[in-house]
Amino acid sequence: MRRRRHLAMVAAACALVAISACSTGPSRSSVPAPADWASEAGTDPLAGDPSFTAPPTSLLRSAEPAPADERPAEPAGDGEGSTAGSLYGSLIAAAGPIGLRLLEPSGEVVGLLSPDQIVTQPTWSRDGLRLAATLVHPATGASQVAVVDVTTGDIATAPSSRPYFFYSWSYDGARLVALGPGPTGGTGAFILDETGAPAADVTLQGQTMYVAWEPGGRRLLVHAGHQLLLINDVDSPRDYQDFGLVGVDFLAPAWVPGTQDFLYVDSYDQAPAGAGEAELLERRSTTSPQLLRRSTDAGDVTELGPAGLYTMLAVHPSGDRAAISAASPEQQALAGDGAETDSISPTGPETGVPAGSVQIVDLATAERLTVLDRIGLWLEWSPDGRHLLIAANTDDPGGIGMSWHIWDGQQSYELARFAPTETFFRDYLWFADQYNETPRLWSPDSDAITFGANTVDGDITAVARLSSAGAMTSLGSSDVSFWSPPRPDDGLP
Image (cartoon, rainbow, N blue to C red; front, side, top):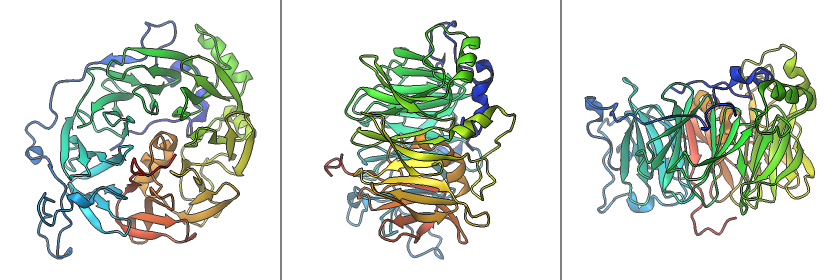
């Protein structure tokens, strides 16, 4: 379903060729606009489709008795026996081709969403009160946005003119940014309200698009192609700051909590405004990518040392340090040797996954500590900030292919080996630092993770607990699963 996008992670050589060949974003000599703007069409793609004439309005209970009884699931009403009052808490959203299940950590199903449809991109609001997802008709491909209020079980739906393949909630929960196929190709960024309906009449478009919400605010960083922008008001996206061309050696920028600063990777040695293509290519060939910290208000830029062709960023909840994963300098030197990197495969070391490391960077001193001597494919801090979750490939050519590692502040250890589901690998792991912009895999208590794993029993919702390294528990069938974040009153950083 999801349109395959070319990334720096799997097409590093793109950074070394002409910008016009890698990005359709505007240059500084073009009309000053961050991307191509297009009004949302006022048509309803679901009109006339009888299967969508009655969209879901509330979560369903798990059908009883078990699977042999083919009676349809019943709505979870507000009366006695309703699950609505029990939904707000630690829940796992498990999605796939048979809908979405809301699970207790024990595996008990407390609610079902559209079991007769494909459900993708389950995304919790930052307070854990709502859950957004894409509903896709399995026969027609028509899609809707669904937003579940987990305090009541009520569902709001809105038709979408395209199947969105990423969501991120603003910190106040009033807006969603959705990424999906652009109106004229490439990727579009669409601003939605809390019900999933359009909140702005314009679309930001580029060949590639990665975003990051300002903590506690409504500003939105956008990495579109080689360009870096700050949308000052998402309800008026034409109001923006242009930070220029920075390259494609990273995906999503990362805000530093408690500040007006953010981290990104610059491939052009802080090229001046108006630098032409020839100058940018020269800068790219003579310098290595650098990790930078920029203040959005003062404009100050702080250099934090070298980055790499495949840099991933994850800032600690305290804002004093960041985890980065980057290719080694030797790998960067090979990027222009004519070799192609076709894909990253979860099945063994012959994958094109470059050599590299995961490091912790002190954001005040730029000092670094290597915590894993291989490149990380997923970086996510636990809600309490005590552990860093890292996905990496394994060395066993006949083995499962990937493993979860935990850095506990003192040492790194392997938590579990796994084979990701095709969907989790293709649509999430490849874009990990974009997904890590919001809490995803960690339990709110920071003692376990959930993820989509492929096993002998098929694709499952897996749970691995820090207290049981090497073990993995199945909570039933799904492509991908995400844990709800901590409640607002949990007192976590």
